[in-house]
Length: 412
Image (tube, rainbow, N blue to C red; front, side, top):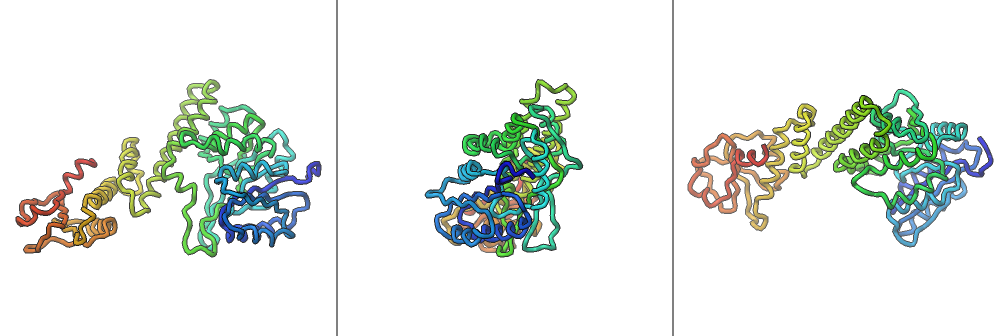
Protein backbone atom coordinates (compact mmCIF):
# COMPACT_ATOMS: atom_id res chain seq x y z
CA UNK A 1 0.00 0.00 0.00
CA UNK A 2 1.12 3.52 -0.74
CA UNK A 3 3.04 5.46 1.90
CA UNK A 4 2.18 8.92 0.50
CA UNK A 5 0.04 9.49 3.58
CA UNK A 6 1.45 8.30 6.93
CA UNK A 7 -2.00 7.02 7.92
CA UNK A 8 -3.89 4.87 5.43
CA UNK A 9 -7.10 4.65 7.44
CA UNK A 10 -8.74 5.96 10.61
CA UNK A 11 -11.17 4.10 12.84
CA UNK A 12 -13.50 6.67 14.45
CA UNK A 13 -15.14 5.67 17.74
CA UNK A 14 -17.50 8.01 19.58
CA UNK A 15 -18.26 6.84 23.13
CA UNK A 16 -20.10 7.80 26.31
CA UNK A 17 -19.64 6.24 29.75
CA UNK A 18 -18.82 2.75 28.47
CA UNK A 19 -15.34 1.93 29.76
CA UNK A 20 -15.87 -1.85 29.78
CA UNK A 21 -16.84 -1.82 26.12
CA UNK A 22 -13.89 0.38 25.18
CA UNK A 23 -11.51 -1.92 27.05
CA UNK A 24 -12.88 -5.01 25.31
CA UNK A 25 -12.90 -3.29 21.92
CA UNK A 26 -9.33 -1.98 22.10
CA UNK A 27 -8.10 -5.39 23.25
CA UNK A 28 -9.81 -6.98 20.25
CA UNK A 29 -8.34 -4.41 17.85
CA UNK A 30 -4.84 -4.90 19.28
CA UNK A 31 -5.11 -8.62 18.53
CA UNK A 32 -6.84 -8.39 15.16
CA UNK A 33 -4.70 -5.59 13.70
CA UNK A 34 -1.32 -6.60 15.12
CA UNK A 35 0.20 -7.49 11.72
CA UNK A 36 -0.47 -4.13 10.02
CA UNK A 37 2.77 -2.65 8.70
CA UNK A 38 1.52 0.74 7.51
CA UNK A 39 0.21 3.80 9.29
CA UNK A 40 -3.30 3.86 10.75
CA UNK A 41 -5.04 5.39 13.76
CA UNK A 42 -7.97 5.14 16.14
CA UNK A 43 -9.84 8.36 16.93
CA UNK A 44 -11.87 8.23 20.16
CA UNK A 45 -14.23 11.05 21.05
CA UNK A 46 -15.29 10.71 24.68
CA UNK A 47 -18.52 12.29 25.92
CA UNK A 48 -18.18 10.63 29.33
CA UNK A 49 -18.80 12.53 32.56
CA UNK A 50 -15.99 10.67 34.36
CA UNK A 51 -12.37 9.62 33.71
CA UNK A 52 -12.83 5.83 33.55
CA UNK A 53 -12.63 5.61 29.77
CA UNK A 54 -9.58 7.85 29.69
CA UNK A 55 -7.77 5.59 32.19
CA UNK A 56 -8.45 2.54 30.05
CA UNK A 57 -7.38 4.21 26.81
CA UNK A 58 -4.04 5.14 28.40
CA UNK A 59 -3.28 1.48 29.07
CA UNK A 60 -3.36 0.88 25.31
CA UNK A 61 -1.30 3.92 24.35
CA UNK A 62 1.82 1.85 23.65
CA UNK A 63 -0.03 -0.97 21.89
CA UNK A 64 -2.29 1.01 19.58
CA UNK A 65 -2.13 4.31 17.62
CA UNK A 66 -4.94 5.88 19.66
CA UNK A 67 -5.78 9.59 19.43
CA UNK A 68 -8.02 10.33 22.41
CA UNK A 69 -10.20 13.43 22.90
CA UNK A 70 -12.09 14.06 26.15
CA UNK A 71 -14.88 16.58 25.63
CA UNK A 72 -15.52 19.16 28.31
CA UNK A 73 -19.26 18.60 27.90
CA UNK A 74 -21.48 15.98 26.30
CA UNK A 75 -21.70 16.84 22.59
CA UNK A 76 -24.33 14.22 21.89
CA UNK A 77 -23.74 11.21 19.62
CA UNK A 78 -24.08 13.00 16.25
CA UNK A 79 -21.72 15.88 17.06
CA UNK A 80 -19.27 13.49 18.68
CA UNK A 81 -19.14 11.40 15.51
CA UNK A 82 -18.71 14.53 13.38
CA UNK A 83 -15.86 15.62 15.66
CA UNK A 84 -14.09 12.27 15.28
CA UNK A 85 -14.43 12.35 11.49
CA UNK A 86 -12.95 15.84 11.30
CA UNK A 87 -9.98 14.77 13.43
CA UNK A 88 -9.18 11.76 11.23
CA UNK A 89 -5.91 11.99 9.27
CA UNK A 90 -6.15 8.68 7.39
CA UNK A 91 -6.93 8.55 3.68
CA UNK A 92 -10.03 6.54 4.56
CA UNK A 93 -12.29 6.51 7.60
CA UNK A 94 -14.57 3.87 9.05
CA UNK A 95 -17.05 4.36 11.89
CA UNK A 96 -17.06 1.79 14.69
CA UNK A 97 -19.52 1.71 17.59
CA UNK A 98 -17.82 1.17 20.95
CA UNK A 99 -19.72 -2.10 21.50
CA UNK A 100 -19.12 -3.64 18.06
CA UNK A 101 -16.20 -5.22 16.21
CA UNK A 102 -14.36 -5.07 12.89
CA UNK A 103 -13.23 -8.01 10.79
CA UNK A 104 -9.67 -6.78 10.35
CA UNK A 105 -8.58 -8.85 7.31
CA UNK A 106 -11.77 -8.08 5.38
CA UNK A 107 -11.58 -4.37 6.27
CA UNK A 108 -8.05 -4.27 4.85
CA UNK A 109 -9.22 -6.03 1.68
CA UNK A 110 -11.81 -3.32 1.08
CA UNK A 111 -9.32 -0.53 1.84
CA UNK A 112 -6.84 -2.10 -0.55
CA UNK A 113 -9.53 -2.04 -3.25
CA UNK A 114 -10.20 1.66 -2.60
CA UNK A 115 -6.51 2.51 -2.85
CA UNK A 116 -6.15 0.59 -6.10
CA UNK A 117 -9.31 2.19 -7.50
CA UNK A 118 -9.22 5.87 -6.48
CA UNK A 119 -12.35 6.74 -8.48
CA UNK A 120 -14.35 5.18 -5.62
CA UNK A 121 -15.61 7.45 -2.87
CA UNK A 122 -16.80 4.65 -0.59
CA UNK A 123 -17.36 0.95 -0.05
CA UNK A 124 -20.60 -0.20 1.56
CA UNK A 125 -21.09 -3.70 2.91
CA UNK A 126 -23.58 -5.76 4.93
CA UNK A 127 -22.71 -6.61 8.50
CA UNK A 128 -22.54 -9.69 10.67
CA UNK A 129 -24.61 -10.08 13.84
CA UNK A 130 -22.85 -12.01 16.60
CA UNK A 131 -23.29 -12.97 20.25
CA UNK A 132 -19.90 -12.87 22.02
CA UNK A 133 -21.27 -14.42 25.20
CA UNK A 134 -22.92 -17.42 23.59
CA UNK A 135 -20.54 -18.39 20.80
CA UNK A 136 -22.75 -21.37 19.95
CA UNK A 137 -25.47 -19.00 18.79
CA UNK A 138 -25.54 -18.92 15.01
CA UNK A 139 -23.90 -15.87 13.46
CA UNK A 140 -26.25 -13.95 11.20
CA UNK A 141 -25.91 -11.29 8.54
CA UNK A 142 -28.00 -8.20 7.82
CA UNK A 143 -28.92 -8.42 4.11
CA UNK A 144 -27.11 -10.41 1.45
CA UNK A 145 -25.69 -9.79 -2.01
CA UNK A 146 -24.54 -12.47 -4.44
CA UNK A 147 -21.95 -10.20 -6.05
CA UNK A 148 -20.09 -6.91 -5.71
CA UNK A 149 -21.94 -4.07 -7.40
CA UNK A 150 -20.38 -0.84 -8.65
CA UNK A 151 -22.43 2.32 -9.07
CA UNK A 152 -20.87 5.08 -11.13
CA UNK A 153 -20.60 8.68 -9.99
CA UNK A 154 -23.94 10.55 -10.29
CA UNK A 155 -25.77 7.45 -11.61
CA UNK A 156 -28.66 7.81 -9.18
CA UNK A 157 -30.89 5.54 -11.25
CA UNK A 158 -28.44 2.67 -10.66
CA UNK A 159 -28.15 3.62 -6.98
CA UNK A 160 -31.86 3.32 -6.19
CA UNK A 161 -32.17 0.24 -8.41
CA UNK A 162 -29.32 -1.50 -6.56
CA UNK A 163 -30.52 -0.53 -3.08
CA UNK A 164 -34.14 -1.50 -3.74
CA UNK A 165 -33.31 -4.74 -5.58
CA UNK A 166 -30.99 -6.08 -2.88
CA UNK A 167 -32.81 -4.45 0.07
CA UNK A 168 -29.59 -2.72 1.06
CA UNK A 169 -29.41 -0.55 4.16
CA UNK A 170 -26.34 1.63 3.48
CA UNK A 171 -25.16 2.13 7.04
CA UNK A 172 -21.75 0.42 7.21
CA UNK A 173 -19.11 1.98 4.99
CA UNK A 174 -15.49 2.95 4.44
CA UNK A 175 -15.26 6.47 3.04
CA UNK A 176 -12.52 8.72 1.70
CA UNK A 177 -11.79 10.96 4.66
CA UNK A 178 -11.68 14.13 2.56
CA UNK A 179 -15.26 13.46 1.45
CA UNK A 180 -16.40 12.25 4.87
CA UNK A 181 -15.26 15.52 6.43
CA UNK A 182 -17.45 17.48 4.00
CA UNK A 183 -20.42 15.37 5.05
CA UNK A 184 -19.63 15.52 8.77
CA UNK A 185 -21.87 18.51 9.42
CA UNK A 186 -24.78 16.55 7.98
CA UNK A 187 -24.61 14.24 11.00
CA UNK A 188 -26.04 17.11 13.02
CA UNK A 189 -27.97 19.20 10.51
CA UNK A 190 -29.95 16.49 8.71
CA UNK A 191 -31.14 14.29 11.56
CA UNK A 192 -34.80 14.20 10.58
CA UNK A 193 -37.52 11.55 10.94
CA UNK A 194 -38.75 12.39 7.43
CA UNK A 195 -35.86 10.77 5.53
CA UNK A 196 -33.52 7.97 6.64
CA UNK A 197 -30.21 9.77 6.97
CA UNK A 198 -28.04 6.97 5.57
CA UNK A 199 -29.92 6.93 2.26
CA UNK A 200 -29.29 10.67 1.98
CA UNK A 201 -25.59 10.33 2.86
CA UNK A 202 -25.12 7.55 0.32
CA UNK A 203 -26.49 9.74 -2.47
CA UNK A 204 -24.25 12.62 -1.34
CA UNK A 205 -21.15 10.41 -1.54
CA UNK A 206 -22.09 9.42 -5.09
CA UNK A 207 -21.62 13.04 -6.12
CA UNK A 208 -17.89 12.69 -5.38
CA UNK A 209 -17.12 9.31 -6.94
CA UNK A 210 -18.18 5.74 -7.60
CA UNK A 211 -19.59 3.58 -4.82
CA UNK A 212 -18.91 -0.12 -4.40
CA UNK A 213 -21.56 -2.24 -2.70
CA UNK A 214 -19.43 -5.18 -1.54
CA UNK A 215 -20.93 -8.57 -0.74
CA UNK A 216 -18.46 -9.46 2.02
CA UNK A 217 -19.00 -7.85 5.46
CA UNK A 218 -16.19 -6.26 7.46
CA UNK A 219 -18.32 -5.07 10.40
CA UNK A 220 -19.71 -7.12 13.29
CA UNK A 221 -22.72 -5.92 15.29
CA UNK A 222 -22.50 -7.48 18.75
CA UNK A 223 -25.76 -8.46 20.44
CA UNK A 224 -24.27 -9.50 23.79
CA UNK A 225 -20.89 -9.21 25.49
CA UNK A 226 -19.48 -11.68 28.03
CA UNK A 227 -20.03 -9.25 30.93
CA UNK A 228 -23.70 -8.65 30.08
CA UNK A 229 -26.47 -10.58 31.79
CA UNK A 230 -28.82 -10.34 28.83
CA UNK A 231 -28.85 -9.27 25.21
CA UNK A 232 -28.99 -5.53 24.65
CA UNK A 233 -31.63 -3.98 22.45
CA UNK A 234 -29.83 -2.84 19.32
CA UNK A 235 -30.28 0.80 18.34
CA UNK A 236 -31.26 -0.26 14.84
CA UNK A 237 -34.00 -2.51 16.22
CA UNK A 238 -35.51 0.21 18.40
CA UNK A 239 -35.38 2.50 15.37
CA UNK A 240 -37.16 -0.12 13.28
CA UNK A 241 -40.10 -0.17 15.72
CA UNK A 242 -41.06 3.35 14.68
CA UNK A 243 -38.97 4.17 11.61
CA UNK A 244 -40.60 2.42 8.67
CA UNK A 245 -41.94 5.68 7.23
CA UNK A 246 -38.46 7.19 7.60
CA UNK A 247 -37.15 4.35 5.44
CA UNK A 248 -39.89 5.04 2.92
CA UNK A 249 -38.90 8.71 2.95
CA UNK A 250 -35.29 7.83 2.21
CA UNK A 251 -36.21 5.53 -0.66
CA UNK A 252 -38.54 8.14 -2.12
CA UNK A 253 -35.77 10.73 -1.83
CA UNK A 254 -33.42 8.49 -3.83
CA UNK A 255 -36.15 7.75 -6.37
CA UNK A 256 -36.71 11.47 -6.80
CA UNK A 257 -33.05 11.97 -7.69
CA UNK A 258 -33.30 9.28 -10.35
CA UNK A 259 -36.85 9.67 -11.64
CA UNK A 260 -36.06 11.68 -14.78
CA UNK A 261 -33.58 8.99 -15.90
CA UNK A 262 -35.91 6.03 -15.38
CA UNK A 263 -38.07 4.32 -17.97
CA UNK A 264 -41.67 3.66 -16.88
CA UNK A 265 -40.88 -0.07 -16.63
CA UNK A 266 -37.81 0.44 -14.47
CA UNK A 267 -39.58 2.99 -12.28
CA UNK A 268 -42.44 0.55 -11.71
CA UNK A 269 -39.98 -2.17 -10.69
CA UNK A 270 -38.17 0.18 -8.28
CA UNK A 271 -41.43 1.37 -6.70
CA UNK A 272 -42.52 -2.24 -6.21
CA UNK A 273 -39.19 -3.10 -4.58
CA UNK A 274 -39.31 -0.02 -2.33
CA UNK A 275 -42.82 -0.89 -1.18
CA UNK A 276 -41.63 -4.41 -0.40
CA UNK A 277 -38.75 -3.05 1.72
CA UNK A 278 -41.07 -0.80 3.73
CA UNK A 279 -43.67 -3.56 4.15
CA UNK A 280 -40.98 -5.89 5.47
CA UNK A 281 -39.78 -3.20 7.90
CA UNK A 282 -43.36 -2.77 9.14
CA UNK A 283 -43.64 -6.52 9.72
CA UNK A 284 -40.34 -6.53 11.62
CA UNK A 285 -41.53 -3.54 13.66
CA UNK A 286 -44.70 -5.40 14.60
CA UNK A 287 -42.75 -8.52 15.58
CA UNK A 288 -40.41 -6.47 17.79
CA UNK A 289 -43.32 -4.65 19.40
CA UNK A 290 -45.19 -7.86 20.18
CA UNK A 291 -42.18 -9.16 22.11
CA UNK A 292 -42.75 -6.41 24.67
CA UNK A 293 -45.38 -6.61 27.43
CA UNK A 294 -46.96 -3.29 26.48
CA UNK A 295 -47.91 -1.15 23.50
CA UNK A 296 -50.52 -3.58 22.17
CA UNK A 297 -52.94 -0.87 21.06
CA UNK A 298 -50.31 0.64 18.77
CA UNK A 299 -49.43 -2.86 17.58
CA UNK A 300 -53.09 -3.41 16.71
CA UNK A 301 -53.20 -0.34 14.49
CA UNK A 302 -49.92 -1.32 12.84
CA UNK A 303 -51.36 -4.78 12.20
CA UNK A 304 -54.51 -3.16 10.81
CA UNK A 305 -52.40 -1.15 8.36
CA UNK A 306 -50.60 -4.31 7.25
CA UNK A 307 -53.96 -6.00 6.82
CA UNK A 308 -54.96 -3.10 4.60
CA UNK A 309 -51.83 -3.74 2.51
CA UNK A 310 -52.92 -7.34 1.98
CA UNK A 311 -50.33 -8.78 4.38
CA UNK A 312 -52.58 -10.28 7.06
CA UNK A 313 -51.21 -13.77 6.34
CA UNK A 314 -47.68 -12.48 7.08
CA UNK A 315 -48.46 -11.15 10.58
CA UNK A 316 -46.32 -12.67 13.39
CA UNK A 317 -49.55 -13.43 15.31
CA UNK A 318 -53.00 -13.85 13.85
CA UNK A 319 -54.93 -10.61 13.69
CA UNK A 320 -57.60 -11.66 16.19
CA UNK A 321 -54.94 -12.40 18.82
CA UNK A 322 -53.31 -9.00 18.32
CA UNK A 323 -56.73 -7.39 18.66
CA UNK A 324 -57.39 -9.34 21.87
CA UNK A 325 -54.10 -8.12 23.34
CA UNK A 326 -55.03 -4.54 22.48
CA UNK A 327 -58.44 -5.02 24.07
CA UNK A 328 -56.84 -6.38 27.24
CA UNK A 329 -54.54 -3.37 27.41
CA UNK A 330 -57.53 -1.09 26.97
CA UNK A 331 -59.31 -2.85 29.84
CA UNK A 332 -56.29 -2.34 32.07
CA UNK A 333 -56.42 1.39 31.32
CA UNK A 334 -60.12 1.60 32.19
CA UNK A 335 -59.62 0.23 35.71
CA UNK A 336 -59.55 3.05 38.32
CA UNK A 337 -56.03 3.18 39.72
CA UNK A 338 -56.93 4.77 43.03
CA UNK A 339 -58.84 1.73 44.34
CA UNK A 340 -56.57 -0.60 46.31
CA UNK A 341 -58.98 -3.58 46.27
CA UNK A 342 -59.32 -3.94 42.53
CA UNK A 343 -60.03 -7.28 40.88
CA UNK A 344 -60.97 -8.36 37.39
CA UNK A 345 -63.91 -10.77 37.37
CA UNK A 346 -64.13 -12.81 34.17
CA UNK A 347 -67.59 -13.94 33.09
CA UNK A 348 -67.67 -16.59 30.37
CA UNK A 349 -65.21 -19.04 28.87
CA UNK A 350 -61.97 -17.26 27.97
CA UNK A 351 -58.80 -18.81 26.58
CA UNK A 352 -56.40 -19.26 29.51
CA UNK A 353 -53.56 -17.66 27.53
CA UNK A 354 -55.67 -14.52 27.17
CA UNK A 355 -56.38 -14.48 30.89
CA UNK A 356 -52.71 -14.89 31.73
CA UNK A 357 -51.84 -11.98 29.47
CA UNK A 358 -54.57 -9.82 31.03
CA UNK A 359 -53.17 -10.55 34.49
CA UNK A 360 -49.70 -9.57 33.28
CA UNK A 361 -50.85 -6.34 31.64
CA UNK A 362 -53.13 -5.20 34.48
CA UNK A 363 -51.04 -6.56 37.35
CA UNK A 364 -54.32 -7.40 39.12
CA UNK A 365 -55.82 -10.65 40.42
CA UNK A 366 -58.22 -12.39 38.03
CA UNK A 367 -61.20 -14.22 39.47
CA UNK A 368 -63.52 -16.40 37.39
CA UNK A 369 -67.16 -15.68 38.19
CA UNK A 370 -69.13 -18.48 39.79
CA UNK A 371 -72.63 -18.42 41.22
CA UNK A 372 -72.94 -16.55 44.52
CA UNK A 373 -69.50 -14.93 44.22
CA UNK A 374 -69.62 -11.73 46.31
CA UNK A 375 -69.00 -8.69 44.14
CA UNK A 376 -67.45 -5.40 45.23
CA UNK A 377 -67.92 -1.93 43.74
CA UNK A 378 -64.23 -1.87 42.90
CA UNK A 379 -64.53 -4.95 40.67
CA UNK A 380 -64.30 -4.75 36.91
CA UNK A 381 -66.32 -7.47 35.21
CA UNK A 382 -65.09 -8.61 31.82
CA UNK A 383 -67.75 -10.53 29.89
CA UNK A 384 -67.12 -12.88 27.00
CA UNK A 385 -68.90 -11.86 23.80
CA UNK A 386 -71.26 -14.83 23.84
CA UNK A 387 -72.39 -14.34 27.46
CA UNK A 388 -75.49 -12.59 28.73
CA UNK A 389 -74.54 -9.96 31.33
CA UNK A 390 -78.13 -9.91 32.58
CA UNK A 391 -77.39 -13.26 34.22
CA UNK A 392 -75.06 -11.51 36.66
CA UNK A 393 -76.44 -10.71 40.12
CA UNK A 394 -77.88 -7.30 40.95
CA UNK A 395 -74.65 -6.31 42.72
CA UNK A 396 -72.96 -6.21 39.32
CA UNK A 397 -74.79 -2.96 38.56
CA UNK A 398 -72.40 -1.20 40.96
CA UNK A 399 -69.36 -2.52 39.09
CA UNK A 400 -67.73 -1.53 35.83
CA UNK A 401 -68.97 -4.11 33.31
CA UNK A 402 -67.20 -4.46 29.97
CA UNK A 403 -68.36 -6.74 27.19
CA UNK A 404 -65.74 -8.08 24.82
CA UNK A 405 -68.12 -7.56 21.89
CA UNK A 406 -68.33 -3.80 22.55
CA UNK A 407 -64.55 -3.47 22.52
CA UNK A 408 -64.33 -5.43 19.28
CA UNK A 409 -66.58 -2.79 17.73
CA UNK A 410 -63.86 -0.23 18.57
CA UNK A 411 -61.16 -2.49 17.13
CA UNK A 412 -62.78 -4.39 14.25
